[in-house]
Image (cartoon, rainbow, N blue to C red; front, top):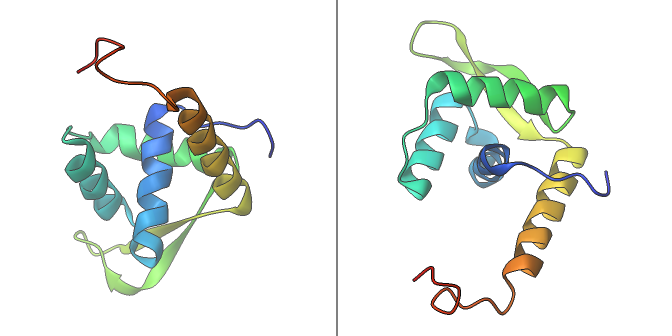
Amino acid sequence: MPGSFLPEFELYVALAVARLKDEAYGAAVRREIESRTERPVSVGALYTTMARLEEKGFLLSAPAEREPGRRGRPRKYYELTDEGREALRHSLEMLGRMSEGLSLADAGLA
Protein backbone atom coordinates (compact mmCIF):
# COMPACT_ATOMS: atom_id res chain seq x y z
CA MET A 1 0.00 0.00 0.00
CA PRO A 2 2.18 2.90 -1.22
CA GLY A 3 2.00 6.00 0.91
CA SER A 4 0.80 4.16 4.02
CA PHE A 5 2.69 4.98 7.14
CA LEU A 6 2.44 3.99 10.77
CA PRO A 7 2.04 6.41 13.66
CA GLU A 8 4.60 6.05 16.47
CA PHE A 9 3.00 3.37 18.64
CA GLU A 10 1.72 1.38 15.65
CA LEU A 11 5.30 1.48 14.35
CA TYR A 12 6.58 0.07 17.66
CA VAL A 13 4.01 -2.73 17.57
CA ALA A 14 4.79 -3.61 13.94
CA LEU A 15 8.54 -3.61 14.67
CA ALA A 16 8.04 -5.86 17.70
CA VAL A 17 5.90 -8.30 15.69
CA ALA A 18 8.53 -8.33 12.92
CA ARG A 19 11.33 -8.99 15.44
CA LEU A 20 9.46 -11.70 17.35
CA LYS A 21 8.32 -13.57 14.22
CA ASP A 22 6.55 -16.79 15.30
CA GLU A 23 6.63 -15.76 18.97
CA ALA A 24 4.62 -12.54 18.53
CA TYR A 25 1.81 -12.79 21.07
CA GLY A 26 0.51 -9.94 23.23
CA ALA A 27 2.71 -10.26 26.32
CA ALA A 28 5.85 -10.86 24.26
CA VAL A 29 5.11 -7.83 22.05
CA ARG A 30 4.58 -5.73 25.18
CA ARG A 31 7.89 -6.88 26.72
CA GLU A 32 9.75 -6.25 23.46
CA ILE A 33 8.46 -2.68 23.21
CA GLU A 34 9.09 -1.95 26.89
CA SER A 35 12.63 -3.31 26.82
CA ARG A 36 13.62 -1.40 23.68
CA THR A 37 11.88 1.91 24.40
CA GLU A 38 12.38 1.82 28.18
CA ARG A 39 8.78 3.02 28.48
CA PRO A 40 5.83 1.25 30.10
CA VAL A 41 3.14 -0.07 27.77
CA SER A 42 -0.41 -0.47 29.01
CA VAL A 43 -2.17 -3.68 28.08
CA GLY A 44 -5.20 -1.71 26.89
CA ALA A 45 -3.17 0.52 24.59
CA LEU A 46 -1.36 -2.50 23.15
CA TYR A 47 -4.47 -4.55 22.34
CA THR A 48 -6.36 -1.51 21.03
CA THR A 49 -3.46 -0.78 18.69
CA MET A 50 -3.18 -4.41 17.58
CA ALA A 51 -6.93 -4.46 16.83
CA ARG A 52 -6.57 -1.23 14.82
CA LEU A 53 -3.68 -2.72 12.84
CA GLU A 54 -5.85 -5.77 12.12
CA GLU A 55 -8.70 -3.52 10.95
CA LYS A 56 -6.28 -1.72 8.62
CA GLY A 57 -5.21 -5.10 7.22
CA PHE A 58 -1.63 -4.78 8.53
CA LEU A 59 -1.78 -7.62 11.11
CA LEU A 60 -3.32 -11.08 11.23
CA SER A 61 -4.00 -12.96 14.43
CA ALA A 62 -4.81 -16.55 15.19
CA PRO A 63 -5.18 -18.54 18.39
CA ALA A 64 -2.34 -20.98 18.75
CA GLU A 65 -2.81 -24.65 19.19
CA ARG A 66 0.36 -24.56 21.28
CA GLU A 67 0.51 -23.81 24.99
CA PRO A 68 -2.34 -21.91 26.61
CA GLY A 69 -1.92 -18.39 27.92
CA ARG A 70 -1.88 -17.49 31.58
CA ARG A 71 -5.65 -17.66 31.96
CA GLY A 72 -6.08 -20.97 30.17
CA ARG A 73 -7.16 -19.48 26.83
CA PRO A 74 -4.99 -20.15 23.81
CA ARG A 75 -2.49 -17.40 23.11
CA LYS A 76 -3.26 -15.26 20.09
CA TYR A 77 -0.25 -14.96 17.80
CA TYR A 78 0.22 -12.07 15.39
CA GLU A 79 1.96 -11.68 12.07
CA LEU A 80 2.40 -8.83 9.64
CA THR A 81 0.48 -9.05 6.38
CA ASP A 82 2.08 -8.06 3.09
CA GLU A 83 0.38 -4.67 3.48
CA GLY A 84 1.72 -4.40 7.03
CA ARG A 85 5.27 -5.14 5.91
CA GLU A 86 4.93 -2.52 3.17
CA ALA A 87 3.61 0.10 5.62
CA LEU A 88 6.47 -0.72 8.01
CA ARG A 89 9.04 -0.49 5.22
CA HIS A 90 7.59 2.81 4.01
CA SER A 91 7.55 4.28 7.54
CA LEU A 92 11.15 3.25 8.21
CA GLU A 93 12.29 4.67 4.86
CA MET A 94 10.50 7.93 5.64
CA LEU A 95 12.20 8.14 9.05
CA GLY A 96 15.55 7.40 7.45
CA ARG A 97 15.11 10.14 4.85
CA MET A 98 14.00 12.66 7.46
CA SER A 99 16.92 11.90 9.78
CA GLU A 100 19.59 11.52 7.08
CA GLY A 101 22.47 13.89 7.78
CA LEU A 102 20.84 15.22 10.95
CA SER A 103 23.27 15.81 13.77
CA LEU A 104 21.52 15.52 17.12
CA ALA A 105 23.94 18.05 18.60
CA ASP A 106 23.34 20.56 15.78
CA ALA A 107 19.57 20.14 16.20
CA GLY A 108 19.89 20.83 19.94
CA LEU A 109 18.87 17.26 20.79
CA ALA A 110 22.10 15.98 22.32
